[in-house]
Amino acid sequence: MSVTLLTAWFLEALAVILVRHRLGRRWLRHPVTLVVLASAVYQGLSSALLTIPSFAAWNVFGIGIQPGFADDAALLTSAAMLAFTIAYLAAAPERAAAAADPEAVRAAARVLDWRWLAAGCAPLVVLTYAGRGYNDAQAIGPGSPLSADLASGFFVVLVTLTAFSFLLRHGTRWFLIVLAAQSAVLAAAGERAPVAADAIALILMLALAGRRPRRRQLSAAAAIALIAVLAITGLRAQQGRALFYTDSGLAGRLSALASGITSLDAAPGQPSVPVQFAERIDGTDFAAGVLQSVSAGQPRLSAAYVPGSLLLVVPSALWPAKLTHGDALQLGTLEIDDFGLQHTNFLSGLPGLYVGFLSAPWLMAFLAFLGLLAGRAERWLFRRCTPVRLVLLAGAVESALAYEQSLPGMLVQLRAAAAIAAVVKAAELAGRRRAWAGGTVASYAPLGATGRLRQPTARSGRFSSE
Image (cartoon, rainbow, N blue to C red):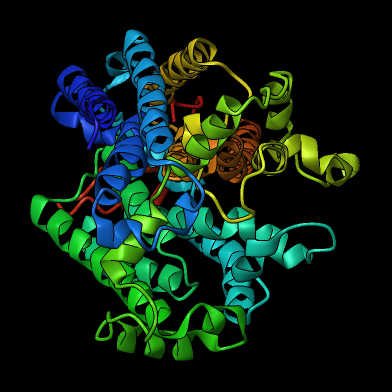
């Protein structure tokens, strides 16, 4: 264990401490806090676990990389994330943490109707369990079916929006039942990250709307999400992912997941589940391989690729020629080819992707710029509780927990929420026009003791602040 690695761990811990100190007891309600914590996991915890010889022996990402470069990569990426954190806090994101306006919450419950959201989500759920939806999105590319493209973008975020809008209308006494159903729907898709991401998103959206679940409910929610994640882990350790790529149906998948929770032992010839976890969160070896190649004399790629890669967020339907620019948009693949890295599914992380394009000072300046933008965006997000901002909050949480995919992948995760937010805004404006034209405005009676929204009534007169 080198001094370089110890310094990297110190910087990761310092970033977390600064966020906790500055944002106070509500620090976990901020999406950017999740980015900082993800950095601590992918760059701090992973490097710590891989110092254990029995763990490092199974690390396929570290093949051909000298340990010294792995330590250097951990230090460089940790320093860049500290710069990101300091710039984020400089934007004073805590200033916009205001209490939810009851009128705005009623408007959100009216616009975000869970029945319409569920109707939009249902086809994606059916296609996913038939092996032609979200699971196909693991190989999105030229010729991929439209169902896979839609499920890739909208399946996860629509599930949590449906759950949130139901709870907003009927009260948080249904929270655990709804969360269990949400976790089951997502777990049956075969991916662990969306289960945790949607659980967190649901809680943060309720908190923004002034409907934060009770402490006991939060503890039970953590247990439910953990059980779902362990079920997926156990099933995949024994059978792999094949079940989730076939037409196995919801019942078959849930039955297999139930058996997975009792079979967490790895298949013969495979590493244990803790070792697989350590390998899965390795977020430093990609940058380490690039640094090793640069040290051997390979020049960095042009920094012009960095802004160009953000065009990945543009949908192919709007830019048909996008698929012909794959090398320019997929920076990870470009670096693997140019720096002679092994062709594998590296987890680059937010700063790691840009090590092959930016020197250390420019990398930290770039991450500081991103942190400043994130802080300003979060201030806007939390300034008021509106339907659009609630939708974007769900997308922000999904984006933050896609840290391993770096900035282009994080923005792609946010893209679906932005599209839904645009539709929600249009529906909101259309509802206001109809209200003005008819001379009546739909309103909700005061909340009951359980927080349930009562049936709407109509009142005449001028349009209110709803």
